[in-house]
Length: 417
Ligand SMILES: *Cc1c(COP(=O)(O)O)cnc(C)c1O
Image (cartoon, rainbow, N blue to C red):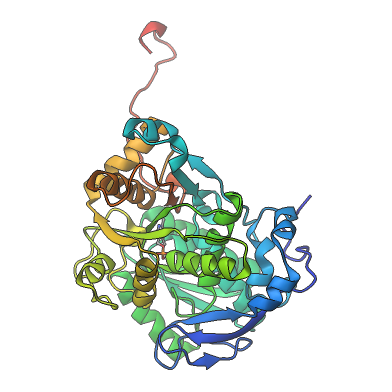
């Protein structure tokens, strides 16, 4: 039996981190002190001694471990296991959309959803934030802050509370109500700001300079990527050390896409997987598609998307610090970036639940809409095994009305129910 009480995650040697390296220009930094962005103002990669991991770890050892993200501990940054602030980050299932696949004339095993809504706080933000908070605790941070469109703030609040850290969260004032409330309920001080997420981010930056808060914004500290990387490690392992042909990822700040691509490359260096890596597809909404615009223009950096608006609030990110990391991964993988209109996002979300009983979040719906569009346009074909990421539980989002009532005193004609 495995119980999540923060300190029984048994390990011999915890990590093989060597140093940090600026993702843009390669400058190095020490790993065991507090780090934010590189001197070039860009994110750091966390680097490992791959040869030492290889000598210490093999696929059989990984297969024998409990099925949660900490089984990859040698490939993760936490040095001391007592700093791991777990709420039970269990392996998330792969669910084939078999009825939908049949409708599209696709083999059921070629249309698979990785359901990240099963994680603590109901979204894959848990993977990144459990890592960032565990590292903040390890490095002696006391106060953390971040801007959020909802789910990241919720994960931050839960893990910060568990670690005994103070958390300040700023969100756009049109963030879904349930997200604002869950953040507050889980113990963070949350403020609604009359601006978009990058504007909230600027205020967080100011608070960090003036108050000494630690900035946990997407990619502004090195460790959230490492948490999100476990999506790629886990996907390869649960597919029997194989990878799919193509991955559809709803892209906001892009941590997950960047992290998975890093993870696949590390698995390849370790010899745990071989052959072609998946094509990475960055999915955005036509209401906020800076990465798609830069991809199509052949640029390495994206310009800010003005008046960003989409029902998929998790991907309403007008400008990303890691833009070049997303675009590099998409291009290296032979994938592409694509935008889908909100109307298609909503209809795909409805179709998934009506066809397969799978309640997706709108961002997950965006990947399904993009999959269907890519199939129709010939960007991918039916024979390719595709994995879509449903990043949050659909239960956090507005649902269709259910207006029917029954009067217990009336004569009920059950044949009409
Ligand atoms: C944050 C979020 C995304 C975007 O993830 P990134 O890795 O930051 O690009 C997508 N969907 C949901 C539900 C999210 O909360």
